[in-house]
Image (cartoon, rainbow over all chains, first blue to last red; front, side, top):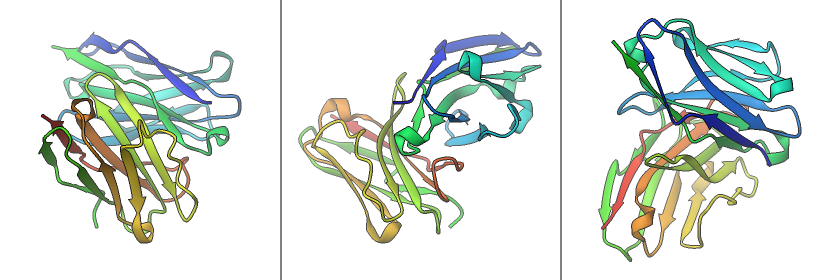
Length: 114
Length: 114
């Protein structure tokens, strides 16, 4: 069965610094991978998704993620953090073996310091 | 409708009572998920409806939990004989087709079991 591991339940960066949120997945077949974001007191929304096209995926708000099959990773990055990026970020995986059921990671809360 | 709606937004109940949570998906979306979000626990998959197929109930934590989707649209999650550990935010998401599509989340129902 597919699974997702997000390293670090909390990440803190300074404003303007690089954001790196780690996600590793387990899947025996080509996966579909997603990053969702939950801003304070708001619902979850899609940041970006990988569906077997380009391995570098660009999303909203300057975020991007790179699918690395050899490392089974799909880390989320942003070159320069903004205060408004403070939120909880969830990595998710879906594949055919799970009937395309989507499984979410435990989430990483990003704090941005002024 | 503009998006996924859930009702009630908040529900406080006494231990042992039954509760029903409602999800109205985006019109035309064939797939629907229920998740549970507990503090620090990420999103826990509960159940997945896809069109007319039998739902994937593999995430339901006990037989006290059940869900149905009437007419391929509105879904109801029922929790019987609620326990304090059922306290969480219950999220519903709908999507146009398969799980490779973007999920559109509702605002959630916060359930508190006293």
